[in-house]
Amino acid sequence: MTTFTRIAAAAAVALAAGLGAAQAQETIKIGGIAPLSPPGGVQTGESLRDGMIVAVEELNASGGLLGKQVELLVEDTSGVPEKGVAAFERLATGDEVAAVTGSAHSAVCSAVGPVAQKTNTVFVAGECWSDSVTAAQIPQVFRITVANSLVYSVAADWVKEAGFKNIAIISENSDWGFGIIDVFTKNLENTGAKVTSFTAERTVSDFTPQLLQLKRADPKPDLIVAGFTGSNLLLMLRQAYDLGVAPTADTAIFAAGADVLEPEFWDVMNDAGKYVIGNPAGLPGKPDTPLSRSFSKAYQEKFDRPANAVAMEGYDGVMVIAEAIKAAGSTDSDAIQAELRKMKWDGTRGQIHFPQTTEPAWAFQQWPDVPIFVIQYDETGQTPSQAEILWPKSSATTDELVMKPE
Image (tube, rainbow, N blue to C red; front, side):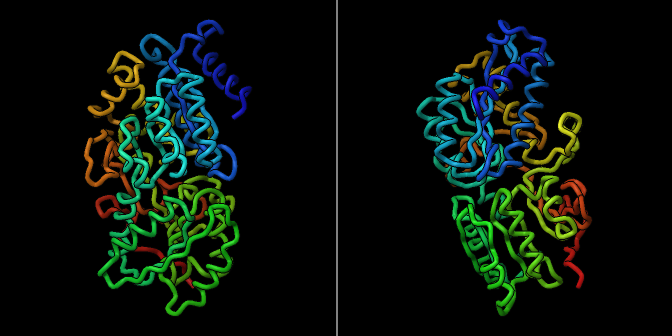
């Protein structure tokens, strides 16, 4: 993000709150990081940022924090670890923010963890799923989304329940991508299911070789797991459809990346998006609480698009920081950390807390109760909330996976 953009964003917050230029200097600053340019998952980054904006506007409308207005400063990481580190350092040492939230791409989250420790700056990780983010057990790092070992063990339970026997995984060669392969493989051991995996650079946009290999396989996979993020996930899904690989009457396709939750998914896929399976770490309205409803309404009204799990993470990330600041009565980092460790706050997706569990390593300061769903679109243009819920059983809206008709 350019200096001009960051100044303009800060000024906009000040104007929205009715602050003059002098008053705007007396703010509590909260930092955000997100991929807002390629090669990062731009739409994921924008959803994170926009969720943060709703939170800050809500805080300022109700009086701010500790008698001051809240100023949001968001830096672009482009999904690149080196840019993420530089962005975090600017926020922590240059802007002297009280804390930082957000980010997508696990490699970025893992890279900024040591910077959070070095600068003693709280980092509430958003859309980063690799176990390594919290497994490093850095005291300043908390996470409000899932870890790979948490989410894909649930997804693997669904795979077992659905009876898939030949699973093929195509994933990016990142911590997150390798984690998908590892967790699925371990959780499907001794079930009679066969797991085949391929990896590729995150920048790859042509998946024809891998997909044609799967099309020629004997037996053909009955489930393909697409472990990519950003626009390349959508390219893989579109190419799988155009090549007649999946979804078909014999082969389902499971999209592990968050980009299937965005309206732009349908811009790329159109009718080809029917029968694609997704795995959101949250759905608006589940749980159906006043906060979940009010956030979804505010987000829709401000951005003219439906809220999703990623936007909820952006909102919740700012709000848990704000709640900790209020409880501490201070922006001191040690005080914020102490309050986060004993926090129980009802967010948009449930009650957030950060256990000090150290075994398994990834559970440290990891919210363990992130709601995890397996959904399937069965109509063109659906939002995630309109899709059928396949898993968990307690929330399922159907007990039948729909394979694409011939």
